[in-house]
Image (cartoon, rainbow, N blue to C red; front, side, top):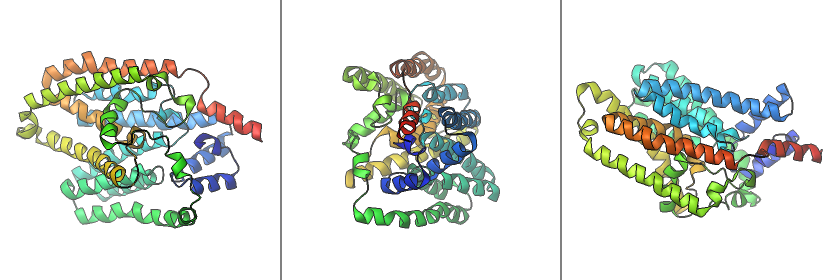
Length: 365
């Protein structure tokens, strides 16, 4: 549906976005503008996706280089999501732009944190506005940055005022959606019926497994590999991932002094580590709260935006745990992540979602 509506007339497209309620409009309008410039074709759609993804990879590599000396490991593991055929940033949806916005927001906030110059704050506000109009995960990320900025950041009043700008800009969109919400004609319930991880605990347990193997993109049968459809394979993957994470936890306990009581030369690195923990933790906690009180929304797909932070944190843990952590990550973690990319890609060979949607719309018109 997301891919196909991009090719439909503008009036139908806007009506579908409004009726959906579950997605802000920016990514759809971006696709429409791109297609008007470069033609309504499969190649045009994929060229925009590739452009966003290449920029994300380049920017993340730079950020990892500035964050940890194990930046090569972090970049390799993060890039694995782009190696997978049918992976959500490779589809005609907003998740690739969500990842790009998350990385850019961290880069800009880091510069703001170091220099407190207004230009970096202005850039961060612009990126966060794009993020919240791309996917509602942007609001969770904004909350994480607000808490982080008020805890660690400089010029707290200026930052808080800047952080409120994306929220204020969302107000007209909310009023635009209210008639659909009040009429009860929204398709949100149908859009969320596929969320099977209805228990918060199960959702949290599955999150690192999905990050290290495969983030299932939703109810699209063209993008659902046998890795997920086969419970035995998925169960084995879950046990393997959590076994590796348990070993990492043991290493963290063993080398805890490097994190709890670092020397003067490591103080800045450790503080940045806890900043990243906060940026990743707040969206997860917020979505868990919503799942407990409103609707079951704990699903890796909705938290894809914290994936860059996840791999940065893992690389920093490798740095804190010395040669033991480095050897363990290259011998066990990297093969598991890259191996899952091969399995997923092999199972997703065949007709792409974009190609099928283009043909569907072409046949209809």
